[in-house]
Image (cartoon, rainbow, N blue to C red; front, side, top):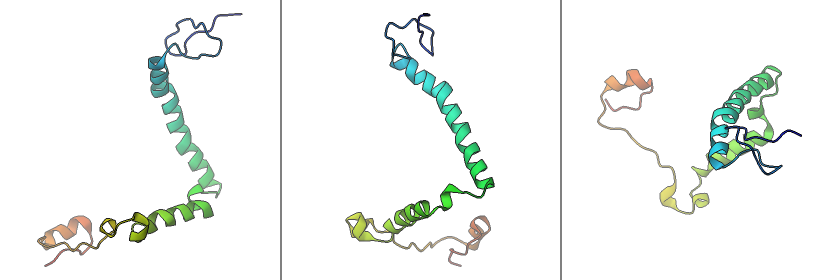
Length: 109
């Protein structure tokens, strides 16, 4: 049987279960090999699901999570302190010149 080697640097491994010779090699392999694979696979799978009409962001469970997250900002009791609640902000001191950037009329004349 061939000796096992570290997946990152190729050093011979003594243990039959180890894949890497140390944490540095594990971290490097994760950053250089695994993360790019995961980052490419995730969006591709989402695109495939959406093309098939099965958008995971539109499931009942996903919409409930979004609703719960958004309602936290509107419910001070969930935050534990009224000072943490989302409060409306009125912008003053901006001329109409900023409306061309944000395309919203939040500015005072």
